[in-house]
Structure formats: C-alpha cells, structure tokens
Length: 318
Image 1 (cartoon, rainbow, N blue to C red):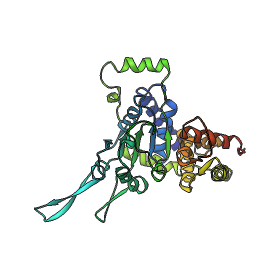
Image 2 (image 1 turned 135 degrees about the vertical axis):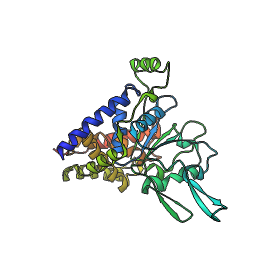
Image 3 (image 1 turned 180 degrees about the horizontal axis):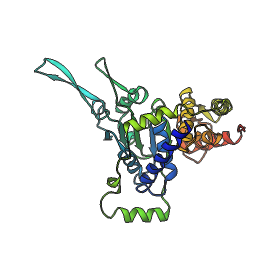
Image 4 (image 1 turned 30 degrees about the vertical axis):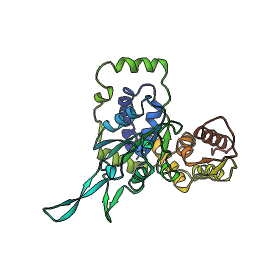
C-alpha cells in the first residue's frame, strides 16, 4: 500500500501545483480542498466577495476529467431548479424525470446562502446519501460526488444562514482570507487577459479519484489517536462555552479527513498532527457558541477560539 500511496501523492502534488498557479498564495487552502475530496466529503468556503472562493472551486473542478456543474443560487430559486422535475410526455402518456444540475461529479454551489432554506434543503439527501428522491423514485448520483459550496458571511445583507443540519453535511468549512501583497500583484497581472482558470487542464479522471478514495479508507489509525479525537469531541459536549457540541457524524468526518491528509502527505498511517490540523476546519461549523459566552468576535471565530483552547489542554498521544 505504501508504494500506491507514494505514487498517488506525487500525482496529487502536481495537481496542487496546477491549482496554485491560479489560486495564488493559498496552498494550505488548496490542500484542505483536496483532503475533502479524498475523504468523500463536501466543502463549504466562507468569505467576503472577491477573494477567490469561486475561482478555487472552479479550478479544482476543472482539474478532473469528470462532469461539472455550477449553480448560482439566488433568492427566487426553487428545489426543482437544483434536483430536476418530472415532466408529462404526451407520446408515452406518462411523466419523465428531467435531471437537474445536481447530477454531476463536481457541483459548485455558488453563494448557497443567497437562496431560501427550502431550496437549500434540496441538497440534504444528495450530500448525505449521494442520491435524489423525486415522486417516490430514487435516482443515484454519479461517483465521485463533491459539493463545493461558497457563501458570504452571514452578517451580509440578503443571506439566509444555513441550518445546523445542513452545516453538518459539510466535511469542512474554510476561509480564503485576503492574499499577501506579492500574491495580489500576481493576481492582477494574471487577470489582464483570459481567465486563468481556463488554462487548467484535467490531470485525473473519475476512476482515479474513486481509486484514491478507496485507498484512503485503508490508511492506518492507531487506537490512541481515536481516543485523542474522541476526547476533544467529548469536551465540546461538556464545556459551558458551547450550547451544541460535535455530533457523532463530526467525529467520523474527522477520522476520514485525517486519513485523507495522511494519504495526501504520502503516508499510509496517521500522525497526531493530522488530527490537530483538521480539528478547527472540521468541527468549527458543527458547534454552537453559548449565548452566555460574550465576546467581540463573530460567532464563527469564537467557535474556532474555543476549539483551539480545548486542543491546547488535551494531551496529545506520543
């Protein structure tokens, strides 16, 4: 397995370099996006407009030779605009299902919190079970299946905050952040002509992704590391600073993400650092800060601060 992991790691490194040529100065963010893909998860990218959320999502989608759809969410969208609709066919005297844009390997759900909760909920079954049910008929989605959603901070006007049940479906929530001055200068120069994302060519196909996802599930995780992860999970449920701790699904997602990160690093075994680096992006959107915890920070930043404090006081296995 080690040789397979090393070979795949080399190919993934080339993929990372390709995307880094478009998304400047954000190698750590790109690594988290690839980790999400390898862990069979979905990614939520939250930040202010114009920092490259959609560019990252499109660059990752174009790096694979598989079907890709971009959905621009707006306040007037309906669930049928996402999953599809049954249409009456006079020739057959019956209804035929017309698939919506959700039937693709990689979905870029742009500004997902611009649409209403009713339309947001159309993604719940797809993200959790990789299938869609319409008129009592279940339609499987293609594999691999990845939702890359972007959202503006909930403090912005015209946004509908995602409910906890939907946030829990995302393996990670990450932020892009503003680029460094040097990176921003490169961005300005590269955007003088054609869009840089158009220059990305596919380096892998769907079969490659599925094979790597299967290998990731066999990455070894010691019992002590599972105990370490569960200790952090348990403390999120016990602290008075949080009114809602991490769910069992969250614990499972951390385990899968740690395996994927180890695979991305070219290892067939996990290290404590694999868990430590992923606790915040995997857990922060799954917890709710207690109303009694007063702070000048935004709620999302408060959650991250609390999780870091829990990690600092939890013994790391040797």
